[in-house]
Amino acid sequence: MTSNSQNIRRVGVVGSGLMGSGIAEVCARKGLETLVYDVSDAALEAGRSRITHSLTRALERGKLTAEDHATALAALAFTTDLADFADRDLVIEAAPEDESLKTNIFATLDQVVLRPDALFASNTSSIPIMKLGAATSRPEQVMGLHFFNPVPVLNLVELVPSLVTSDMAWERMRHFAAHVLGKHVIVSQDRAGFVVNSLLIPYLLAAIRMFESGFAVAPDIDEGMVRGCAHPMGPLALADHIGLDTTLAVAQSLYDEFKEPLYAPPPLLSRMVEAGHLGRKTGKGFYPYPPAAQ
Ligand SMILES: NC(=O)c1ccc[n+]([C@@H]2O[C@H](COP(=O)([O-])OP(=O)(O)OC[C@H]3O[C@@H](n4cnc5c(N)ncnc54)[C@H](O)[C@@H]3O)[C@@H](O)[C@H]2O)c1
Image (cartoon, rainbow, N blue to C red; front, top):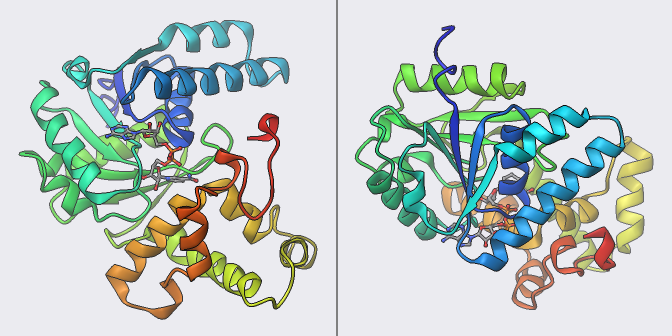
């Protein structure tokens, strides 16, 4: 399989939010030509500044040499035109967790990406990969590649083939994730939530229900898990970190798929999202965040 991922040199990343910017950063750090798309100049600028800030911090902390820092910056380019993805070998989609939005993106990618052997991946947390693949004329080249936040720090990816992903595409992607990006790869069947979110989301929802019912205050719920179970972060702080809109969307997809009450989003989570209290990224969730901490 030596040549499998060596022909992946040009990567496209769709969406430059929390995850897209992290995915673009790890690709650029490996010297891959990385083109980042977002819907507006403002969104793209926010993504660009998140990536450069993160690269500078890595340089200052000695986690990146000056040469690798320069290589990463030189490898990055930005666009608001998806047609610029024509020559990409691999496109990784990291747009908001919304099924119709993502299927539209995959249908468009199918039109604009000209390389017949290009691979398409989604960073979706919960939307069936088969639905995204079915929006293209090449579903055998589509799979899930689910990263974790912050992408440059957490070294896991979940690799999710759909029912029709080809062995060749799967193996190229596995080789790319493991040997080019250097991530630890676990494999999940194409079920909403995959391995990690199927286990994590019921836990986060249970903490939100506990807070909602007045059972305990937020810091005590979080400290309980940090000090009592040695978790690095409590569940409410973690939900703020993931984004409450993303947490809600993933819970909704899990509930739609399995119809299990443990996946049903608590009303407080829905109200907070409707209020725009999305956690760290908007400065307010279960806790307040000063701009510098977002
Ligand atoms: N937040 C997490 O911890 C986490 C972890 C793993 C996977 N994910 C998944 O990654 C994906 C992105 O999540 P995020 O946390 O980065 O969200 P985010 O809200 O931070 O970023 C989404 C980005 O997509 C852009 N966007 C909006 N409409 C678009 C469109 N039509 N086409 C392309 N881009 C568009 C937005 O401008 C924004 O920059 C979701 O599918 C989410 O489930 C999130």
